[in-house]
Length: 280
Image (cartoon, rainbow, N blue to C red; front, side, top):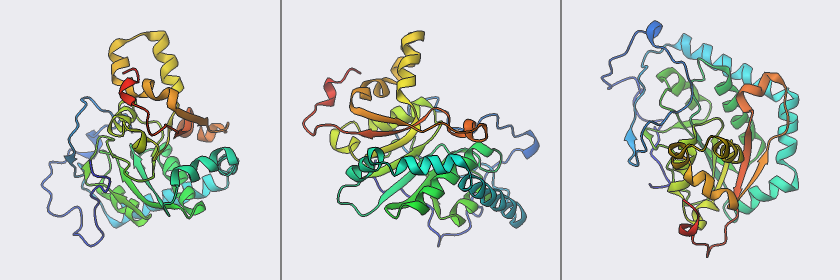
């Protein structure tokens, strides 16, 4: 997969125009989850358009207000103070700068953000990404994807300075240059797809990942011993010896659902390492 994924450009027509979509009634459209669930390990990109094409200026305005309130809530919290302080410790900041190397900017790819209109955890997660970009000048363009994104959410995301991908990459973006993947609480298969797509020392060393703790997956599998589950997470298990994980510090109940079990992951792999020897 090319590192420069296609995004919806600002000069293109309204995304609600030109699409023939059969839309279920919103009242019957149940969304009981807000994260990407991958049922099959598809390697090809899939062209994507929102299923929910209903929008209005009032709906978008309400959602933008929700996001602005959420950013303010997070910014004024002790969680953000602790989180931002942790990012600036030598232990973590040096890892960012090492990954950045000579590049001026590190783009951020947000996978599996979920519905920012229907749920607060996705709004808090997006708010965290927004505050990080404000804080660090070296964080570059922000790209976002989740198959549940609606047209209203798409427009608000772009108004917030993000680009929405037009293809479902299944998490398989190749990091041909330093790249941050912001993926809190995604499915394990999505992390595994990302690792598989970058299963070379030079590519993995370009990856900075914010997401679920890999050690927790290893501990869970050591208890349940499910071979099918282990196969869907084999790259997560195999990379454990090469990754440095930094769990985010404790936080209040207000932010537990959005960020519990999250860690920073940095890769430091000798360029001559043959990852084919890793246990897969």
